[in-house]
Image (cartoon, rainbow, N blue to C red; front, side, top):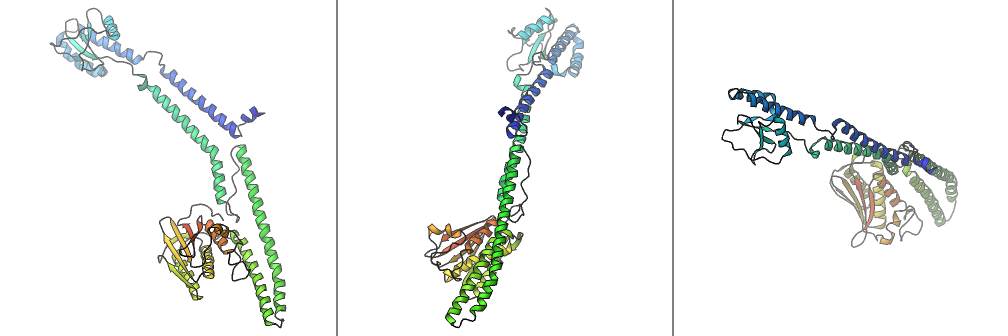
Amino acid sequence: MKLLGFLNLRGISGQIAALVLASIVAIHLILTTTFLINRPDQPDPSIDRGHNQLLAVAQLLGTSPAADRPQLFADIAKTFPQLEIEALPPDFVPAGDADNPELHSLRRRLGNNYRTFPLPKGEDTNKVGIALPDGAMISAKLLRPRPFWQGQWVLTLLFAVVSVTLLGLWAARALTAPLSSFAKAAEDFSLNGAAAPLPERGPEEIRSVAKALNRMRERITTLIDDRTKMLAAISHDLRTPITRMRLRAEFIEDDAHRSRMLRDLEQMRSMLEAVLSFLRNDRKLESMTLVDIATSLQLITDQFADMGHKVAYDGPEHAMATVRPDDLHRSVTNLVENAVRYGAEATIRLRVSPDTATIEVEDDGPGISDARKEVMLEPFVRGDDARNMDEASGFGLGLSIARTIVLAHHGAMSLNDRQPHGLIVRIQLPVRQPNRQAAA
């Protein structure tokens, strides 16, 4: 069974085995074809043909009168330029015979009336000298076979390596592309239905994983939808009794009891609205837009200043970035609300680089201890001095909603200490969003 599974071409193991087998067969076919075409085990016919031409030219010059040889040299240079036939000067002194099998073979084929000798050192090593029967001497180029590394075998091996490498790269990409799509789908995963489901293609194992992830995504989306619908229904149903209780509270004669009752009812209503807003936050994503975030931050500063809070803006007058305007306005507003709730003054600071926009909301409040900084980013977690459940202290959703919005922008949010006391909430957003569906 394991062997059959290994040979199954629908699986990853079968495809890898087929790739290795195809690569081996391709290399053998290339090398065998090159061997049959070139036949390195047989002498090069061009070399033998060059030797025959040299013998014929030498015998022609040896039997021709000396007066006709200049014209013969010109004709031979045109007909057989590869031999490089040249006449040696009359005073040229030939060297002694060298122990060269090629020279001995050439002399044996020319006959006893001809003599072959090597040229002095410094001359072309492929050239030899030939003494004609009348004593005249010529030089000619002796053709030799090229070394192995200069032949076609190197090109053949290089071609085989390149071909198999390209085949391997293509196959590796084909096998790993679905895994890359899984990673991208995990990054793009959102509950608003914007991202497309995973493509169910490739080997059997990949298709099975894709189907399982798509089913898991559907279950998660259904679960979140059911949770939101349930809480929305509870919120809607609770509005009616809360309204009735508010009407009945108006008939309480004691002013102190009536005001406390109305405050508790308003707190319940605010809590329901805040929870419902948090649950629906990742379901409604507006489109990315190129906006002037500096103007948006100045608008938030003016809004809080109009309400009597000491909020200042520190940054450029204009700064463009691709964001969701309403979501960014909401996240910064939540941070400033926390800042003015726990501190006397707040500052919105903006710093922009070519790739990143950094927004800081700074206050002079009591700050947050290092042990609770990470916990405070979770929903429904409030500060140490906000233990009492009242509207002034909030419901522990401001930082969580702000972080969710920042993550949807592919950014990061962190809590940092301010000296001598206070808190700095730092948001880092990319100026240009990647070309993909936004993830909540």
